[in-house]
Image (cartoon, rainbow, N blue to C red):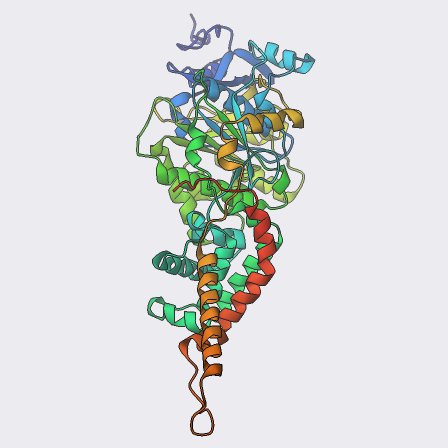
Length: 534
């Protein structure tokens, strides 16, 4: 062989049928030739050609190292989630999916064969078989089709609630003080009216003295919190908070045949409440983190959690909120949970969080405006060195294609690979609403969570105390009226403690509150009772 002749391309171990691949393609393909169990994403695209013998995969054990699925609207992000979720389920890994647009419910039904699906399967050498996944469907507060998911105000916590109420840092700290006081005094915060009652009390003349030793609460800040709560309730948010509280361990279930259950949170009914559903997803993740034991690196994750519309979570977030997210994402890996953020561009995710996302599936980006161009360049910089011109590739790939880099079994980044993705085997679209209703009502979880319950908590305790004070005041007044006058007339007496309570601002405020809220609360409590998680 002369010096000018190139050596023949040698297929790396684990890359079958790759003899005819270009040398650059072989080098990329060798980075995805894993020995252990892995999910098939698709096949390599090189120089405008689809190379079906160069499979692009992701090792199952590294899916707890988190990931990012990004791309412009209409480029196939949802189908990528569906593709990954299906294969995780087959491997016995439970999956959580947030269904923003209402088109992920099809994962519970077999796919429908058509020319496009069969053509894609042929291109990537996929043995396509219509397959349904075991699925459960949930809905926030029962708004929409699904098993109701609720959280108590106490478990939601002041940081997450401040995000939902759009409070600033000072107001968030004051809300934390309110939570602390309620915990110390045994005033349970199950729903929003409980929180309203405690805040109202603490801003009264009687309540102000309660907080003097631990920092106090300014009337202005308390007023802002109360107004925010009022607006929040006016938007119909009350049903999301209360009991029975959803036990997030339900997300870790597997089907009788060993496949992982796909939990689909149906969110079309709350699309106009983005702060709420994004923060609720964060509560679910934080609750899992709190409850799960440390397990380190496993052969496969306990759960993979897909966080759709992730940019909504970070928009306008306080420093404390971002720190909480970063810490949760950093530490939950060791508890066997993988988190994939789904958004349009990597710049939607803070750098501290982005740095922890080891697996990347980047769909096409648009570059029509100067801002688009800037986002494209920023995205390219987040990838390892590549044999591709990524600016060209990311604006030229089609729907169902993506640029991929994942972590190898040894934890090192794989080569960047333009990829034609496989076709999902479940239904690519929503299931029939009637079928969805039947699936929800047939679930063993439906009886556990469908009915709301309104137990005695802070609101009832404060209202009962003031009602008792009012009765005592009435008795005192009646007795005073019957007492005989001495010395030709009744001397003016100092008001009793009971009379002071009755005349206080807190009593009047709570009386008004009871009058305006009781009809609304009766409606909610008509659903009956259910056991509380903790």
